[in-house]
Amino acid sequence: MMTLPLVLRADRRQFVVIGGGAVATRKIQTLVKAGCHPRVISPQVSAEVQALADSGAITLNLEKVGFDQAYSSGAFVVLATDDAEVNKAQADLAKQLGALICRVDDQEDNDFIFPAVVDRSPLLISVSSSGASPALTRHIKQRLEAFLPQQYGHLANVVESLRAQVKSVVEATKRPSFWRRWMQSQAPDLILAKQETKADEITQALLAGEHPSRGEAFLVGAGPGDPDLLTFRALRLIQSADVVFYDRLVNPAIMEFLSPDAERFYVGKARSDHSVPQDGINQLLVQEAKKGKRVLRLKGGDPFIFGRGGEEIEELAAAGVPFQVVPGITAASGCSAYAGIPLTHRDHAQSVRFVTGHLKNGTCDLPWGELIHPSQTLVIYMGLAGLPHICQQLIAHNMPAATPIALVEKGTLPDQKVHVATLETMPSYIETHDIQAPTLTIVGSVVALHETLKWR
Ligand code: SAH
Image (cartoon, rainbow, N blue to C red; front, side):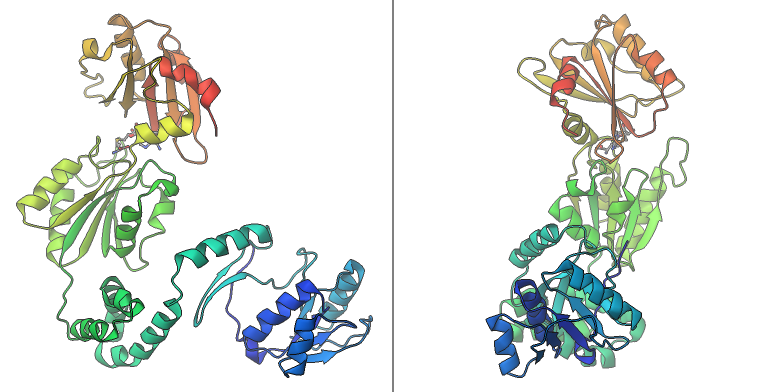
């Protein structure tokens, strides 16, 4: 981070605005809205600023801005004239006198900046790009404006009014989980829909401990890596989990969406690291759900594609634990899209086959004959170590040695790489390049499309 957003009690601070044109007017209006009484210094001001002065909301000094303005230490000074030299000279002076400055025409030395604000008072959402792009912050603000109902301010007020009662009934250590349960209950939606009596019934029941959260497990696909590829449902369930069991392929950026008090358990598995055996994971899921927790099993890609998701829910089903399964974008889809290699294409492949190239005892036992078909794309998961063997077997079973093959390294992540070779040349290519897991292999004539369709 280059800057730190803080929330300031602006009504208790001295603000000085130098300038009275369009930009200054917007800043002055923001300050007045936040409860400040700024002093405005400018020989001319807009009609809006004059009106604020007339109503007593600001102190207006209609004087020429000179180099002798007195700024008090700790004051917040906004330099917003249309003369860059005046702004700079006044900024230097104000700094020398211990004031904090914001130059609207040059973000370089600013002590503070004005974020874009989505105002649902008392709820405020501020958006800042640390000065990088006001246009981008405005764009994001607009999207948030559209997304957040106006009544959120009212909801915030209701929550505030409940806090004293919750404090007297629920002990301190249990309050965060009480509030989480409350936020996940129907109460907030009912308040937004102005059904406050019903909302209050739910609140009172929760306070009386009558709604112990029902233990439940979610088997959720986290997609191939890029957090933008999560589904809405996955995100909602990630945010609401009490405990999470995750594996190696889940991007740490996705773990950021968890509630800060969610318990996290890493359950492998790198190829050589079987820290928690599969049976152990299945039992842990059941145990935690039976304690009444919302248990999240978070897996890379799609949980039902080479993810052992089926085995995990068999155990949950046998134990009578309610569960839901959320699909994720599997590595084949993610890598194919981000590498510009369509898995099917009318001129190249009418079918696609996903196989695992995981080695057992140094070899992999695949039905080679079935994999060789001129209009079929072959996608191999977990196949890097076994790739020379796989290429050799495919050639031995009459797949042309010149068939193009792509190795997508860290697909959908910022450092994704796509390596293209042929069945014949890939084994030596791997030997001479440093290739990092995870990788996915795509074999077939669709790989030739990468050159024209790559877009990242
Ligand atoms: N359930 C997962 C697959 C688990 S098996 C899914 O649906 O994607 C693990 C294998 O998936 C890895 O060995 C690798 O072949 C592939 N994989 C997963 N994420 C990947 C990524 N970001 N880039 C390339 N391959 C990936």
